[in-house]
Length: 454
Ligand SMILES: Cc1ncc(COP(=O)(O)O)c(C=O)c1O
Image (tube, rainbow, N blue to C red; front, side, top):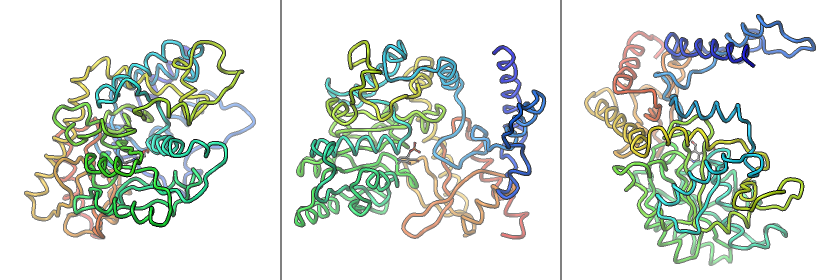
């Protein structure tokens, strides 16, 4: 182990140097990948020197998500105390299903869940779990809602046409999950949004009434705290009113921006969370923990065990269900995703988490300010969003983003809203400061200036 820890340290040193030297790794064409790197697996063991060389090359050519040029996805950066927690979780290698096997780590997970339920105003019956990502947290919410609507479905399967409501700007996992659940993608109603990308409660009600008139069974509404492209927050209170009228489960998908609950300045964006049935957030997005760290909580823990508990004599041999977390989780064996959030939270406190969240909004303000003050840019997104969507000199965003990536200048993606295609700059990367935002724009400008093919 000692030698491998030494090797690990050397490789991490290399990674940190590379993040500075070549913040956007030189991409390898897919058709050259297997010729460029020694990825093949053989009968004979690799020699130590070759092994180290291959790992070094792999590190050099892997995209650098913690570099200050990474704006491509809804995560990025590296917070040391969170990374420390995740490294410890790997070394400890517990599985979270039982107290017997995970011990005190169960307390870590339960503490986080308890605090989050408390912060959002859920009552004493609330609880939650960690899921392998935001899509799966949404899946768990949908399953709980399905089984609340009709508990017999767990044994008999779905009968009748059950219908789901989510905005046209919401994440694709809602439709994907509908297919997993046997409900069917065609039973997902995509509710219209206003110009800001917020779900329209009037259209929601109209669609529910339409389904009821056909004897369909509405059961689940998904609202979003931070839509994937524009970073918009749905109005939870107006959507909750509709849900209460028709007795529907209301879930808030806060995978992207649900972590605003940690900010006194921005938690008003999720006003009304206490009225919902379930809420999820990805700490690996706004809170900057390593992937994955997704949390789902629900007002009434009985729905967690109704949908996810299963007897297993070989597994549950000690302690009560409250400490055997496998009774409320999607998986059987489950990685310890809680420790990295706990080490971060413990070391920076609530105040530190608030600062992490607030900074992302401040950086988005810097970016929007820059765009508004430079006439070659067109802005497509709005205040209170950490997705800053824009175009530069009317250059097709796909062309611009692809060339920036291929030529190792910047990692940034593009998106669409209302038939407009634009570059989506996300200010979620915890490594970036104001100077990196300004550098982002200057890089684009000088790149366009010297690139004839644009
Ligand atoms: C709003 C929203 N929900 C869910 C997800 C899915 O999260 P994950 O990638 O962790 O499955 C995303 C991912 O970007 C998202 O933006």
